[in-house]
Length: 216
Image 1: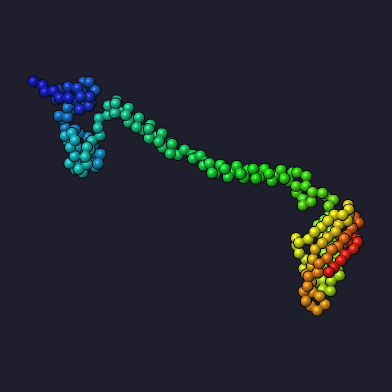
Image 2: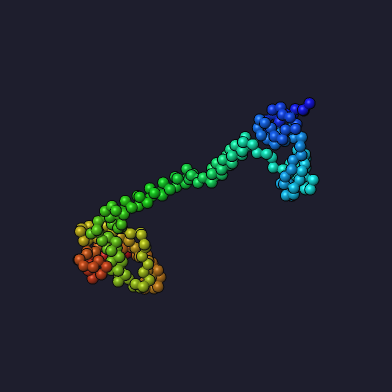
């Protein structure tokens, strides 16, 4: 009587003498025959019973298992899943909300700066092109320096001043100067100066008229 055992692949009853399963086609379906092939560990030709170790290198399950259609489909699905995982891992990261906020602030700042430069007077210190207050202050310093005992020691403040435009070309300046007196001592002299621009090059002192001056 022929012995029957379940196929190691599909589980159907099959003869132990069958070289392959009539249902799924797997060779040696009951595992009764010895397997032969090349060991995956050492590469030598071996013939061993199922689930036995390689007699040469001792690697477990040394032979490549029989690949049925179900095995092949499962391997393809695993390969596709691995590919999707790798693809997701290499996806370009999106900028964080903080980085987006910094870029937005910088864009607004640059835009405001450009608008300021394009507005009338945006690139000059005076909104009125005819206002020569800064030059009037410089010319008053020149007139005051000419009247000091030691002009080379004159030290004028950079910002501590008041300039009033009284008419289209007349300016009144209030400030001070530190300079040495006749005894070599440095003292502070407060002054007010009124000058009038007569036209021409504003940087030329000869084009300015000293109207009056008081040094204390």
